Image (cartoon, rainbow, N blue to C red; front, side):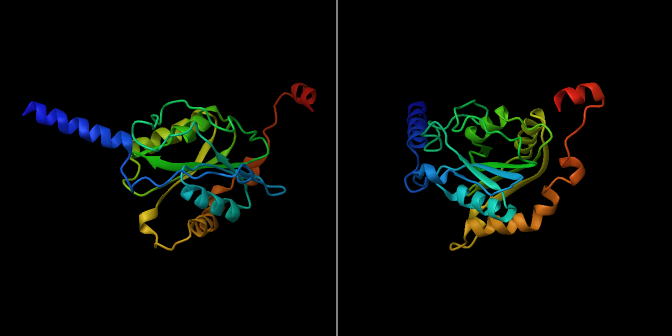
Length: 221
């Protein structure tokens, strides 16, 4: 009997490492020209990691709705293909680009799919190295299975706060709840339109903080 259990465990592990046929969508091959889009004078940036392109379509809708710049992250490869090739969400992995100059932006929107109930290591690695000081931040994710736990949401928010940002909202979108023909981009635009006012920092928040010492302030001007 123990040998039967061991055999079953090995078969389950092999299936998880191989990925379930038909359950994992194919990896999208992205034209480098489509990784970034800019809007003149944009004060918001949408950053997304997307393996198959579904979450990227949603993020592009968010960017259109906000009049924001758009940046798609690339990971090291093979992440999300199966359990065995997917790094832990707490792992530090290489991202392309590794960093982004966030100085022009007041609002930074960051997200991606969740795998095994957690954000991807790619999105988390970007956040851990981003300079979010003084930024309003919105986090988002898409999923088709189980959602994210409260504890995971708290840790995701804490990652942003450790980098100096203020989380304005956390949005989860279950793709299974959308009609089969639903346009994820349109859903992103709809959510941006309904939540834009609460996401955008006020004029006082967006205004640079002045050093109280006039001498130091003059040296920097």
